[in-house]
Image (cartoon, rainbow over all chains, first blue to last red; front, top):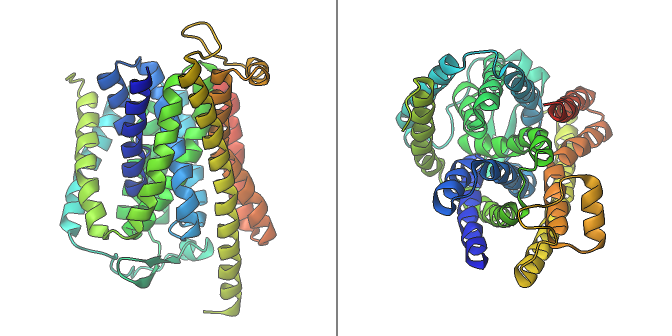
Length: 280
Length: 125
């Protein structure tokens, strides 16, 4: 029992670390690790992974807010889309045949993995030429200090409508599927809204906790939060996420992108297979 | 950059540091409570409840907490952690209001309402 707790703790450190770097909740690590390595019941594993998402988000947000890596306004604005999407997803579960959505999003993820590959060594997105009046009105343009480049990076946000729409759909799909909420957010901000990658992952980190908190209450009342499992996960992830924020600041965007691509491919394939009803 | 914009940015900076500090307090508090419960559990090897069970209602948790039952303590910490994002949104409303940024006060209120709706709707599931 003692050893298992320690092992879960260490794996969770890793999950929190990766989650903080990439703007994900670490559920893609925590859930399979708990079920496959420790034989934890899937229901407790999912309960613990919700805790992991919140722990990554809050653990990372402490540093990312202070370091102004997060675009708070954009995060709040987009949060409307994701939370509405998540509710829609929960409402239409059982009503729709989600396979088409899974296939579309699976393909979209594979496509964006390609798009990210093509961006290669780009550190800062090329300046946005199209002026977005809505982005001006919403005061979304901002700046952050890039430790790696040792410069203040100013950036403009574009594609507000498409980004908002994609966030809504991302909320629907992750509400239906239960995974991928972080990865979709990073994708939308990186590809559609043209934010610097570090801002995208940090802002995604900020947002995923809010969305997860909405569903955490349900898991708690259902009795899915097993303290014996969730406690080492929460502590490990908080620890790992805090460490991750220190490292992320000093990483090149291209390095973060290299870490992100295999994750995109993995989840994209997983979704595609799920959509095609292929069981592995 | 115009003066208005500069003021806005300075205000935003203060807001960010305030928010970060408040969040840190919440995160550290929840971690300490979870850790205390986990250590107690690992030492005594007992959660304070029959094998395989733990409290899931607020009442059970509060009674368990008063009796210092390890699982009740851990769950209290987990609930604190779960509340940190909700708290973050609530605090943002107040801070945007203090900044007199009414557009974002409204946006954040909408997010807060959706969150609460999700919590209430979730109970019915």
